[in-house]
Length: 161
Image (cartoon, rainbow, N blue to C red; front, side, top):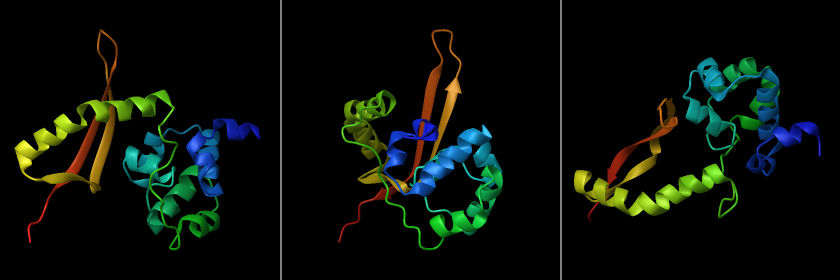
């Protein structure tokens, strides 16, 4: 295994080689997802999702990513251009990574209460993961810094027919 493979997140190793190359270029650049996102004009969460094969870039994203990470445009366009189809959902089940596991745990514990609250506030429907925005913020707290994760999805009511 090459040295760069140790810095490539495990789920990425199971994806097409372009995603390992993106992470390797990110590591070499020293840039954060936040910086790359600013470079390409997208959100931090969406940009990280792109680099895990979870988002479909437009040509302008590919051009900006090429510039941001110093990767040949032709290579990126061939791998992520018109013919690229994201296969969403990566990683093992159940997740073993503590951060990912705790996110699942939070939804397992609070998912049904959240569903009930959504139903009370909006009616019979769901929160879209397609028409969706997400954000992660660090909030300083004397008792220990807090992770604030915002899920911002369009409400989609169930139709009756």
